[in-house]
Structures are given as structure tokens and as C-alpha cells.
Amino acid sequence: MDEAGYEYFDVEADVGIRAWGPTRARAFAKAAEAVFGLLVSVEDVEVRESREARAQGDSPEGLLVNWINECLYVHEIEGFVARRVEMTALDDRFAHGVLHGEEIAPARHRLGTIVKAATAHGVVVAVHDDRHEVRLIVDV
Image 1 (cartoon, rainbow, N blue to C red):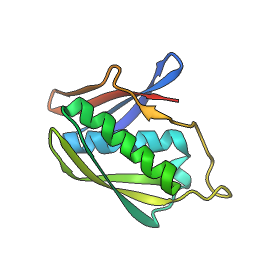
Image 2: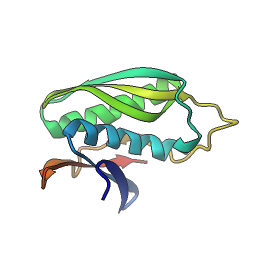
Image 3: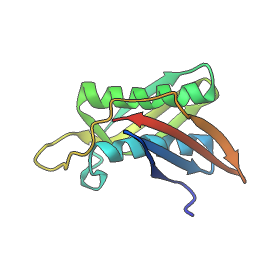
Image 4: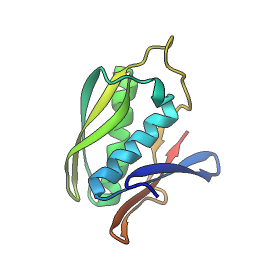
């Protein structure tokens, strides 16, 4: 299995995301990339500009949900999609990252699933065999 990555899993009426990496920050970044991968075919997205996103939470799990929802906020309000996500700060209660991508161009981007929000149902932030893993469900 790759050092960092993500995959989707079936959840009735929603989509599950499992992301992993050598650090929690990398797993959070991959989870955000997975969400953008649902919204648009990321191979069509060019890195032309960046946006910052930040979130707070009462626990690592709550922080993950808030982080993903903040990334969705940037997408909805600014019409922005990210090809790559870089976490610049992360602890148990605060996340800050940079979303690298561009504004949606309907002529070039193949739109995917509309993601409404990350949910608190079934969220996991854990470490298994020195690999950080996160799981969450997004409402589509």
C-alpha cells in the first residue's frame, strides 16, 4: 500500500472516505483530496493558485469533520477545486492548510458528485502500525 493515499467505501446513501499517511497531517490532507476527487476529476485540475483553509475542533475527530467542511466551504463560496492539499499546521484542535488548484472551469472540468458536508457519524482518527488513518462519511 502507498505511503499516503485514499479510497472510498460504500455507505448507504452517502460516501465513506478512508485516508492514510505517515503523519496525521498527511492523512488529513489526503482526506481533503479525496473530497475534491468526488467533486471533480482532479486529473483535469491544474495548480494555478492556492487558497488557505483552517478549522478548529474539540477533538481530533471533530477537527477532521470541521476541516473537511471548511474545504467544502472554500469550494462552494469561491468555486475552487484543489488537486493537492498541504497541511501547514495540525494538532488535536487546530488545522491549517493550503489548497492548491484553480477555480472551476466548466469547459475543462468534469464535475462529479455534489458533496453537502462531512458528518460526525463513524469518524475515526487513529494510528495503526505507525501509519495514521482517518475515516469519515460525507453526505452527498
